[in-house]
Image 1 (tube, rainbow, N blue to C red):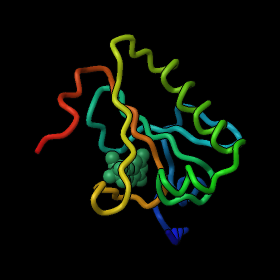
Image 2: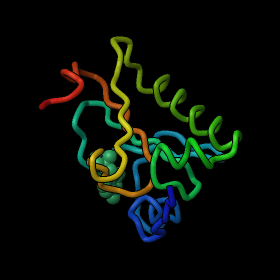
Image 3: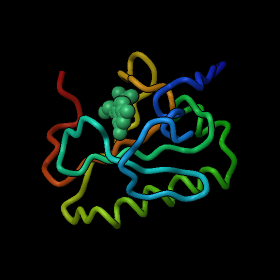
Image 4: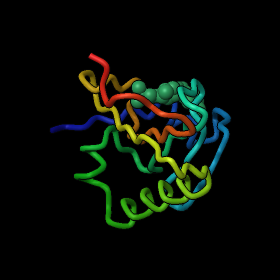
Length: 120
Ligand code: DGP
């Protein structure tokens, strides 16, 4: 698979500081911020700082340090947002995954029941 990263995508602009965001957590390798169109009381996006298009791209090509840093951010968000009854994590990839922004991100949604996994 050839993953072509578009550095004009909206999350790349957020990482460069060209667009503001509501940051929840940041470390060397990842940034977590609130989704602009929240679909639950908690709706945070965790993104790597590196140029990865999708989950499969990140899983294949990100370094061990980047992968650890990303999941450290996921852990920090889950701790900070206090979701004792659980949450949903979603990574949409490309067209069939309904991915809107072509920079890998994980949605973390909680604070209410999130329903069945897919509505068909
Ligand atoms: P996805 O379909 O998985 O690619 O979802 C992209 C999400 O990104 C969507 O829930 C809305 C969110 N989003 C789009 N543009 C912005 C933005 O400029 N700021 C923030 N915080 N979120 C955005």
